[in-house]
Image (cartoon, rainbow, N blue to C red; front, side, top):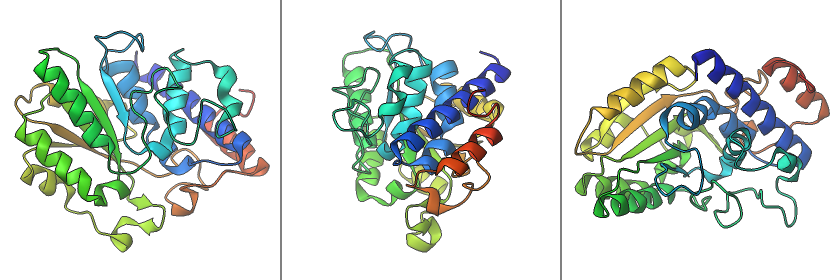
Length: 272
């Protein structure tokens, strides 16, 4: 898929995300929108995944499980789940709950939402593939707020100890969390030096630029014997001017007027 095609797909993901959250009048737009290009690149350029039941597929773990709309959106675009489900987010008895459920949604590899746990789950997958001498790779998407969790650093230590070079973490580094700026809540810098100290290979990328993401993922392929993390610089609420860079949009649904404005800004309007 070309860069232009990736941009169109990312645009569709943003429309899906906003539609889901608006119709549910509930959800997490900020961190879903910031991760769109990362997830688009993974599913359309990087990961080997054409069938969610193929044992040879790569695995994706959405550690920041509250960003479920971005995962549901790409699963819809890939045809793993029906777009008819788009209005069922967070509804009673719906498969598309506020946090992903691997027992209900094809393509969801791990039930996540309790922050800090996803990297440990990804570790288990990656170590299992190593022990079975399989070529499957594992990718985990982390959020800024959750790397304040001690469990993340226990998982980072384990991944290095077992030389999990089939594991790649991506940090959606938008600088914000539910309570405000990371630096105000609990400082997380210097992220690169911390992961390096734990034995990881660290790369940086513009999380909204496909060429930059490609460069990082290609560099990762040359690194052997250790886990790697891509620190992807992003903007919370990317694509919607009134959401961008505002922690208040961590977990709030747009009203009708805001929804129309956002869809117009993304391109094509509601019916486009």
